[in-house]
Image (cartoon, rainbow, N blue to C red; front, top):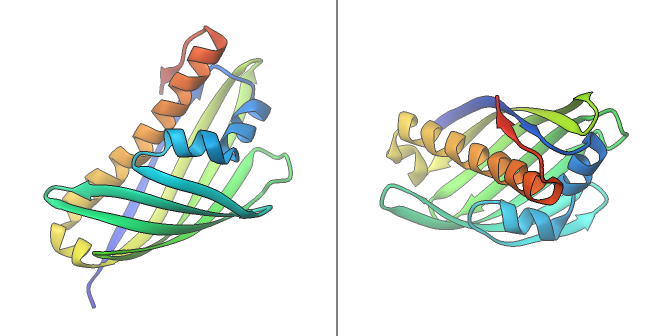
Length: 160
């Protein structure tokens, strides 16, 4: 079985306090509206989520079920996410880090990174295309979060 590694990192500044950003990251209704292709997001427990996502890369479209465990909900601003996805064209697993830092009151820097693997027919799409698509997916989510914060707050969000 072929395995394709996926790694990425980035950051954005959100015009909202860190506590509000953390609450938003754990709000299933808000997540469903922000995650590209999300059909459903549900909380299964305090730190356990399930999402159904529909998305595509090139001419390949799929529907995936994603299970996600979140650690670090202790108010430190550093979250560790461990997830697994299963869908039509294969499966994947990843670990991610999200660090919230409020250096200026009301403005939170969100830094994220992920390291994962994809198996199955997705691997045939090619490494560069998969890495590009994964990076776009994560960037779209955090930019949508920043835009939502800007709309609620009335100030700005600046990509870093």
